Amino acid sequence: MKTVDIKVMLPEKVQHSFDLNVLLGNLLENAIEASEKTENKYLSVHIALKRGVLKIKIENSFESSCILQEKRQGKDIVLKTTKPFTDQHGIGLKNVKKIVKKYNGTMSVTTQNGIFCVNLILYMEDLENGMQRQGQELYQ
Image (cartoon, rainbow, N blue to C red; front, side, top):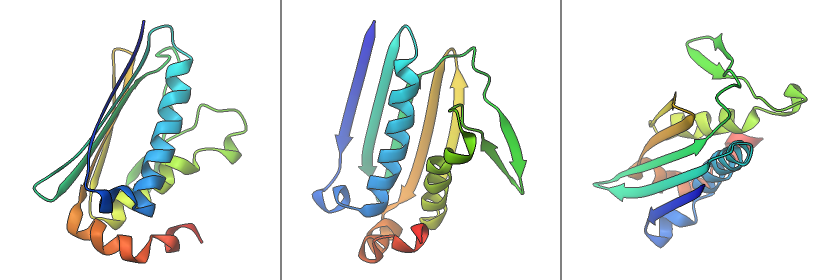
Protein backbone atom coordinates (compact mmCIF):
# COMPACT_ATOMS: atom_id res chain seq x y z
CA MET A 1 0.00 0.00 0.00
CA LYS A 2 1.23 3.48 -0.86
CA THR A 3 -0.48 6.59 0.48
CA VAL A 4 0.36 10.23 -0.13
CA ASP A 5 -1.90 12.94 1.29
CA ILE A 6 -0.98 16.58 0.63
CA LYS A 7 -3.03 19.61 1.72
CA VAL A 8 -1.52 23.08 1.43
CA MET A 9 -3.44 26.30 1.92
CA LEU A 10 -1.15 29.34 1.94
CA PRO A 11 -1.17 32.82 0.49
CA GLU A 12 1.37 33.23 -2.31
CA LYS A 13 3.45 35.66 -0.22
CA VAL A 14 4.12 32.94 2.35
CA GLN A 15 4.93 30.27 -0.26
CA HIS A 16 8.06 32.17 -1.28
CA SER A 17 9.57 32.44 2.18
CA PHE A 18 13.21 31.32 2.30
CA ASP A 19 12.75 29.93 5.80
CA LEU A 20 9.60 28.03 4.85
CA ASN A 21 11.46 26.46 1.92
CA VAL A 22 14.27 25.36 4.27
CA LEU A 23 11.74 23.86 6.71
CA LEU A 24 9.85 21.95 4.06
CA GLY A 25 12.96 20.90 2.16
CA ASN A 26 14.55 19.32 5.22
CA LEU A 27 11.41 17.77 6.66
CA LEU A 28 10.18 16.37 3.35
CA GLU A 29 13.57 14.94 2.43
CA ASN A 30 13.70 13.10 5.76
CA ALA A 31 10.07 11.92 5.49
CA ILE A 32 10.42 10.65 1.93
CA GLU A 33 13.67 8.81 2.64
CA ALA A 34 12.22 7.15 5.75
CA SER A 35 8.94 6.13 4.11
CA GLU A 36 10.73 4.64 1.07
CA LYS A 37 12.33 2.10 3.40
CA THR A 38 8.99 0.78 4.68
CA GLU A 39 6.61 -1.80 3.28
CA ASN A 40 3.50 0.36 3.71
CA LYS A 41 4.74 3.64 2.33
CA TYR A 42 2.89 6.57 3.87
CA LEU A 43 3.38 10.34 3.64
CA SER A 44 0.99 13.03 4.82
CA VAL A 45 1.68 16.76 4.60
CA HIS A 46 -0.79 19.33 5.91
CA ILE A 47 0.09 23.01 5.84
CA ALA A 48 -2.42 25.71 6.70
CA LEU A 49 -2.60 29.29 7.85
CA LYS A 50 -5.38 29.91 10.37
CA ARG A 51 -5.87 33.08 12.40
CA GLY A 52 -2.30 34.22 11.87
CA VAL A 53 -0.81 30.85 12.88
CA LEU A 54 1.00 28.69 10.35
CA LYS A 55 0.63 24.99 11.13
CA ILE A 56 2.74 22.34 9.46
CA LYS A 57 2.19 18.64 10.13
CA ILE A 58 4.23 16.00 8.34
CA GLU A 59 3.69 12.31 9.00
CA ASN A 60 5.49 9.40 7.41
CA SER A 61 5.96 5.72 7.86
CA PHE A 62 9.33 4.67 9.21
CA GLU A 63 11.06 1.45 10.04
CA SER A 64 10.02 1.06 13.66
CA SER A 65 12.74 -1.52 14.24
CA CYS A 66 15.18 1.39 13.92
CA ILE A 67 15.36 2.77 17.42
CA LEU A 68 15.32 6.54 17.51
CA GLN A 69 18.41 7.61 19.37
CA GLU A 70 18.19 10.71 21.50
CA LYS A 71 20.79 12.64 23.41
CA ARG A 72 20.51 15.63 25.67
CA GLN A 73 22.13 18.83 24.48
CA GLY A 74 21.45 21.48 27.06
CA LYS A 75 17.68 21.59 27.49
CA ASP A 76 16.89 20.09 24.09
CA ILE A 77 16.62 16.47 23.09
CA VAL A 78 18.41 15.95 19.79
CA LEU A 79 17.40 13.13 17.47
CA LYS A 80 20.44 11.41 16.06
CA THR A 81 20.53 10.69 12.36
CA THR A 82 20.01 7.12 11.20
CA LYS A 83 22.05 7.79 8.06
CA PRO A 84 25.60 6.54 7.61
CA PHE A 85 28.43 9.04 8.13
CA THR A 86 26.67 10.72 11.03
CA ASP A 87 29.07 13.66 11.03
CA GLN A 88 27.73 14.66 7.60
CA HIS A 89 24.03 14.40 8.51
CA GLY A 90 21.59 15.64 11.14
CA ILE A 91 22.01 19.27 10.12
CA GLY A 92 18.51 19.47 8.60
CA LEU A 93 16.60 19.09 11.85
CA LYS A 94 18.98 21.51 13.56
CA ASN A 95 18.13 24.11 10.91
CA VAL A 96 14.42 23.38 11.34
CA LYS A 97 14.73 23.92 15.10
CA LYS A 98 16.59 27.21 14.55
CA ILE A 99 13.85 28.51 12.26
CA VAL A 100 11.08 27.44 14.65
CA LYS A 101 12.88 29.23 17.48
CA LYS A 102 13.42 32.30 15.30
CA TYR A 103 9.65 32.63 14.81
CA ASN A 104 8.80 31.90 18.47
CA GLY A 105 7.13 28.71 17.35
CA THR A 106 6.91 25.20 18.66
CA MET A 107 8.05 21.86 17.31
CA SER A 108 6.99 18.44 18.49
CA VAL A 109 8.20 15.09 17.23
CA THR A 110 6.27 11.94 18.05
CA THR A 111 6.26 8.33 16.93
CA GLN A 112 3.45 5.82 17.20
CA ASN A 113 2.70 2.55 15.42
CA GLY A 114 5.39 3.02 12.78
CA ILE A 115 4.42 6.66 12.03
CA PHE A 116 6.87 9.52 12.58
CA CYS A 117 5.12 12.87 13.04
CA VAL A 118 6.51 16.40 13.11
CA ASN A 119 4.21 19.25 14.14
CA LEU A 120 5.33 22.86 13.74
CA ILE A 121 3.56 26.06 14.72
CA LEU A 122 4.89 29.39 13.48
CA TYR A 123 3.44 32.82 14.13
CA MET A 124 2.72 34.65 10.86
CA GLU A 125 3.61 38.13 12.01
CA ASP A 126 7.10 36.89 12.82
CA LEU A 127 7.22 34.92 9.57
CA GLU A 128 6.20 37.93 7.48
CA ASN A 129 8.84 40.09 9.19
CA GLY A 130 11.42 37.36 8.70
CA MET A 131 10.63 37.03 5.00
CA GLN A 132 11.98 40.51 4.53
CA ARG A 133 15.27 39.42 6.11
CA GLN A 134 15.16 36.12 4.15
CA GLY A 135 16.70 34.20 7.06
CA GLN A 136 20.21 34.23 5.66
CA GLU A 137 21.85 34.78 9.06
CA LEU A 138 20.95 31.23 10.11
CA TYR A 139 23.18 29.65 7.48
CA GLN A 140 26.36 31.67 7.62
